[in-house]
Structure formats: structure tokens, C-alpha cells
Length: 408
Ligand code: ATP
Ligand code: MG
Image 1 (cartoon, rainbow, N blue to C red):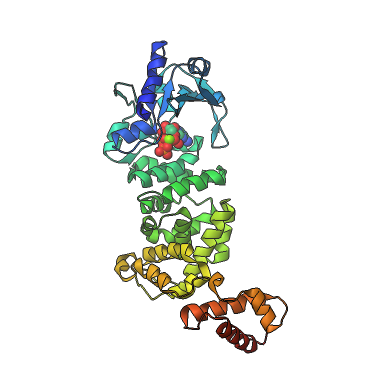
Image 2 (cartoon, protein in one colour):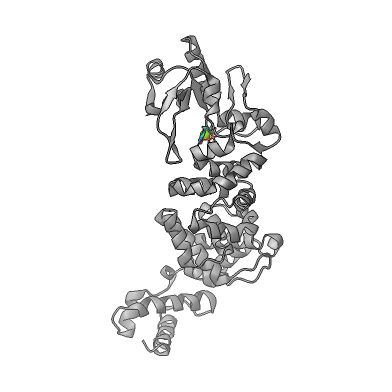
């Protein structure tokens, strides 16, 4: 039983018990656009209590808002009772919700016309706000009066830019105008939500479209940590699709905006990124700044040194970043060059050296200290890149000279 079939079974069961039920929101939009549907949501006039008793296999996800997660054939679906939303508080959440019996009222509370369509199980479309036409014309248009909708929930400002980037759509004139005037309200949105929307935007097939909308509407005006970053890096945003991870994408933006490693960490802190993401981003920014690539002007990279210092996986990420920086002349930095350099290294890490730190201390007769790591790395570079034989004798002799040279 497929995913879609399972959803149809839920709708059928609700109908058998005299309720109405429909596919709604993102899945309807994506079907119409011929995109892959990643989650199917269902709306119904059945109250949460009815849904719960009809489907014993459920999780009461958001009962207060009328949402029950129903399990069917191993898949999980959100089944939400038709509702309208009460007065909005703090520019994000409605103070309360009211269950209603009319599908149209439920669609009316949704953000954009393309997200405000429902479909019954026979694929009949319910589209009171012209979502299908907007989908055809590739437009993001607010349902109702745009300014009012953004004032109700300022997260919609970022959702508009994010959907434009994901779908490659434009924003309808009045909606765009309202975004300009309500942009300051983004100050009220939790940074985690801002981060998630920006991540989706950066991860999309046309991030440059999203970044341009951010520019045109001064959307991040109220988020001083981010406004400058997006403003300066916008012309390079088209390169983002050429790197894979979100940490690489942020690092590319930060580099493009001329941020130092320390400033990059500030942005991570501001957005409450995870430690892992922060460390990755800071490392990529640091490496990019060391190399200092100019846009589309490939230059040689000392991959041997980089590999010994950072290891292969990090260098692969860096290579991808550099290819994005040099995208218009990418044939001059083929991905094989890194692997070839790596395979040609006679020694690939400190562990492969014929001596270890202990041996070094014994032979030199000095207490452990920073000098050990330094000398070991020196020996690694000499064996890997400069032909020093990887034998105990040769390494110890080279180590003695290095210790004297550095006056350790
Ligand atoms: P995707 O899941 O592909 O990002 P989606 O359209 O499914 O897109 P969700 O955030 O999963 O987006 O929300 C599901 C539906 O709920 C939307 O299609 C929209 O109808 C409605 N919705 C979600 N967030 C809001 C909001 N902030 N304001 C108004 N309606 C919203
Ligand atoms: Mg969704």
C-alpha cells in the first residue's frame, strides 16, 4: 500500500462516518506543479475527538489546534479539523482557534493562494482564492489583504521568500509591497524559526531568487546580524547550489560578505546554530580566507599541505567550495586533482610515521610540550611532500635539526 493510497483510506473512513475530508496545503500545490510530494496533510470537519475515536492508532500532536497525527499502513498523516484563527498575539501565534464547519474558512486562514487549495479523493480541486492560476503564473500571492496577513504572523514574510526560492516563483506586486512595509515585524520571530526558513531558502534550487527578494524588500532590516550579510553576498548567491551542505552554503555567503572567522561565529551564535554546524562553518570560512579565492579566477591550491593539516573529508568539502567560487572556469579545478594528490602522498597522516611522540621525547630528551606536535607535523610534511625517508633514523635526524632551528 502506497503513501497516497493510505491517505485516501483515511479520507474514505472519515467520509463513511459522515464527515468531509480533503487533501490540503503543500501536497495539493506540489501535485499541481508536478513536484514530488513529501508530506500529505488532511483537513476535515470532524472534531479531534471524532478523529481520535475513528483512528485508534494516532498521536495527539496538537489537539488544541485541532491536529491529530493518524497512522495508516505505517505512514503518519496530520489530520486537522477545519479551523479559523482568533486574534493574533505577538505577531506569530493566534491566541486561540475556532473549529468551523466550512472548508473555505479553513482555506482562508492559510498564507498564500498556492497553499490554500484542497482536493477531494477524486482529485476535484477546491480553490476559492485562485491558487491554481497563481501556480500557473508562478506567483506567490497572500490570501486576503497581504499587510494584514503579514501583521498576523510575521513568519509568513520569510515563508514567501523561501517558497519563491524553492519553487522559482515571483512574488505578486501587492504582496511584495506589503512585505516591504511589514519587514520590521520579523524582529518578533524566534531566531530558530528564522534560521529554519533561511536554511530552506539557501538549500533551494534558486537561492539567488530568495536573496534578491530579501534585498528588494529589505526583509532582514530588523535583524542586524543578518541584514549586512545578505546584502553584500547577494550577487554570489547563485553559487550556493554548487555546494552540498548547509554549513558550506553559509560559509560561502560569509566569505562573499567578507566576514572574518570571528564574525562568522557571531552569526552562528545569533542564529543559535549547533556546535557542529558552527565549527564546520568557522573552519570553512577560515580556509577560504587563507586561500582567498577570487570569483571565477582559479588559482593553484597547495592541496598536499591542506590534506596533511585537515584530512581528506574536510578537503573534499573545501574543494567543492572552491569550485563554486570558480564556477565559470570550473574545468580548471577538476575534482580529480584532489584525489590524485591524496593518493600520491607517500605518508597520509602522523600515524603512518615511523616514530611517534613518545619516541621523539625519548630521543631528544625533552619533556612533553607543544614542540612535540609541531615537530611531528614538520616530519609529516617532510616525508609526505619533500622526500624525507620514513625511517626511524632519518626522522630523528630531521627532528634534531628542527628542534635546534626553532630553539625548543
Ligand atoms: P513544505 O512542507 O513543502 O515546506 P507546506 O506548504 O506543506 O510546504 P507547511 O509549513 O508544512 O508548508 O504547512 C502546511 C500548510 O499549512 C501550508 O501549505 C499552509 O496552507 C499552512 N500554513 C503553514 N504555515 C502557515 C502560516 N505561518 N500561516 C498560514 N498558513 C500556514
Ligand atoms: Mg508540509
